[in-house]
Image (cartoon, rainbow, N blue to C red; front, top):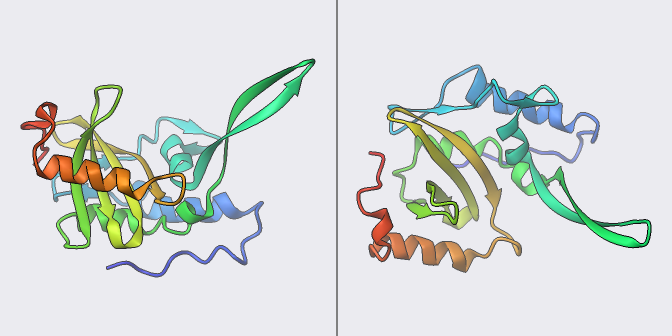
Length: 178
């Protein structure tokens, strides 16, 4: 089901996001993507930063905290930096969404700390997660996707999946979109 990852080795850093944006546009802007054949994945093209959809940056970069000294104080700033593991798997996102019932995908809902219920599509053997949020009856949007690495604990997602499957969270009763 999964194609090869995007080979980023020969791409100049100055061209990286333009190359990746072409892939993103092919899957989500120029062509529509649907979950379960009827829930449109809205790229929210009206919300842009640096000429690209905000979600594009969440699919290709990772928030990093950087400590800087300002005067005699240290402050922490957040910055989004290229995330090569996410970026090279950008072409998997649409495939995961459209093949959400495949045996290689664990589908589960999770109630975030913000009280929003999101849909997780976890390609568990590949350590890659796509997160969607419902917009209305027939649309949703991509929140993010990422490679599960040392900063994203696989055990956390196993627990969330198991809790959903075993109906341990009463807040998730009847939360399914389809």
